[in-house]
Structure formats: structure tokens, C-alpha cells
Length: 264
Image 1: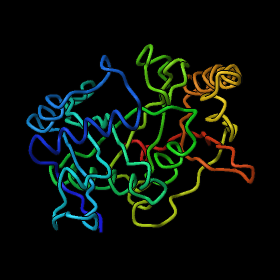
Image 2: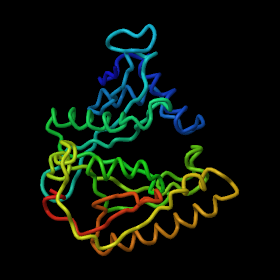
Image 3: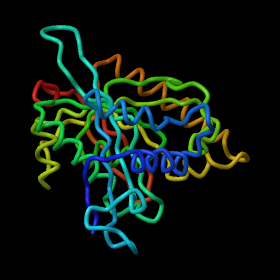
Image 4: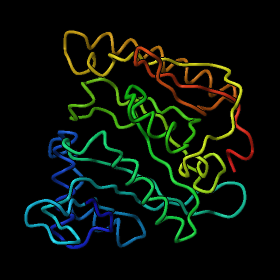
């Protein structure tokens, strides 16, 4: 049984730190320390853990030794037209390797949504690698986030083994927690269809190309070409409103014109 709840105490926050290292393989210069997780909690962010209570010796509420995933966010303020509005920036989501592909990442995101709405926070955002097909499918296809911004080399040089030495290009996921799109998807319904104006493809083998030095140039070529396509589409007012996978496992970003309902 998986229990989702706010992390408590130094041991559980340290377990988040260690899972971060195991997931991304960061060196010491990039690891988010335990103090930062603690501060995130104290200033209105989130540190939500997933605990497997069926592990040997686990108590009914789980504990540091039974943590199998976590999600962490920081609070922020959106300024511009109208009154400043609070939001949450979801900085990290990690799941232990043995628990992946079971929907646990989606459960953690939905727990973030539930907690945010309990405080009347209606918007979250996060960045993700546009070459990672599974992440794009979760963020757009399952959670209903939309994308209107491309951030080239957002983090600069990264020690993460998942980055494969490529520039840290990122898409910005916008998650409008009360929108009809999000509400429909999280309740298991289809959201309204839209006219697809453009499709941007990520070959199924891009992740493997990125992780091997001999094929990394192929991944870099895909990244560079898709960067150009995304930036051009966004300057034309298009947004990523859907994501699908074809019969060969390629990822397909589907872009259209967002409606005022989709972008409250």
C-alpha cells in the first residue's frame, strides 16, 4: 500500500535528498540540500512523500526507510495584469526505479494539486526536458498542462547523467488546476478537442541516443531542430495542447491555439 503525505522530520527530508541523487546522479554542486527542503515547507511550498507501507518493518504511515517517491515545490508570486497571485513551482519529482511505470508520478502530482487547491492556489508550473517522451505524456496527456514557453539551456551545464551532456533545454508546463481541461483529465474523461495546427515529433530512440556517447550527436540534432520549431510556433501564438505516441513509440507534441478557458 502506498501512502501519500507531507514529509516530516529530518530523516524523511534527507531521504528526499538521497533519492534525488539516485535519480539524477547529480554531483555535490547541484544537489538540493536538506535545508532547502525544510525551507520549502516552512515558506508555503510542498514536500510530499510516497511511502510503501508493505515494506518489511514499515509502520502504517511509512517512514524514511519506506519512501519510494517524493515531489517538492517552492512558492512564488505571479505579477503583471491585475493583482499579484500566488502559485507553486514544482521543482522536483522522483520515483524509485522499482516503482516506476505504475502511475506513482501521476499520483504525486495529483496530491500536489489537491494540497494546492486546499489553500486556494489555482496554478502550478514546472519545467521538463522536451526530449523525454514519458515526462511529456504525463505532463500534457495525463495531467492536462499546456506549454507556451521554451527555455534554451535553462540550467546551464548539468552533471545529471539523464542530461547526457546536452544543453539543458526545457519546456515550461503551465498547470491551471481548476480548468476544464485539467478537471476532465484527472476525473478520467476526455477534454475538449482542438484543431491541431502543428506537430513536433520526438523519435522513440532519442533517450537512448542521448545516453550513449556514440549517438549523442543524433539526440543533439533532434534537440536543435525541435528547439527551432517550438520557438517559432510559440511566437505565432500556438501552444502545446496535446501529446500522443504513435505506433512506433515516437512522441508527438500537438500544438494549437489555446482558448480563454484553457488559459484562465
